[in-house]
Length: 202
Ligand code: MN3
Image 1 (cartoon, rainbow, N blue to C red):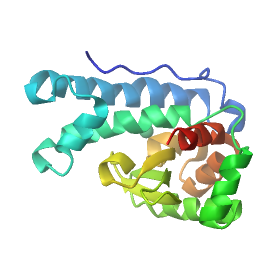
Image 2 (image 1 turned 135 degrees about the vertical axis):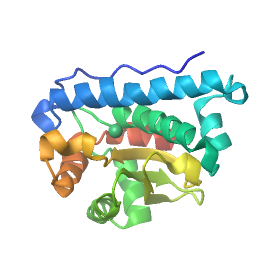
Image 3 (image 1 turned 60 degrees about the vertical axis):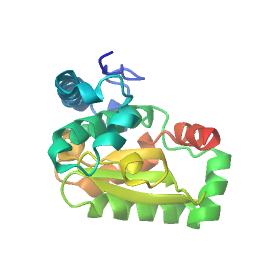
């Protein structure tokens, strides 16, 4: 069973008034994400040892193996973008009460959470991702990963939110202003309802 590009959970112009234009979503979803899926399927087709494995199983099977880096990168990016589309919303930015309480308990305050997330996302040198995770110790934590890696591969816990900080994610909307893209995401695009549902399911 080949891996498939999931449909966006909103229309291509649904985020245009909130800082992510239709062209960004068309290129990012239809071209970039599709390219990761296509490459991953080609690798799986050529490697019998990967066949029949879930996406999580493939990531965990090839991580840390330099000879399998292209498989890891494309599998990781497929995993990351599946979460990324789910964690954007035309009604984003509002933090539901249970998640807000957990943020205050574990990270001090909503302001401190946003500050820490911005710091992680700005300081990810080159391409990568910033994350809000439920760490293995049961507390929320902010992390970052390079290129196609993610919290699953690095044992950081369950991902609740993930922000793509590859230039293809923000260059049309924010040019080189990555900090503005991050602030806009946290205040207007982040689907905290999704994050809370992930938390409840953990
Ligand atoms: Mn991307």
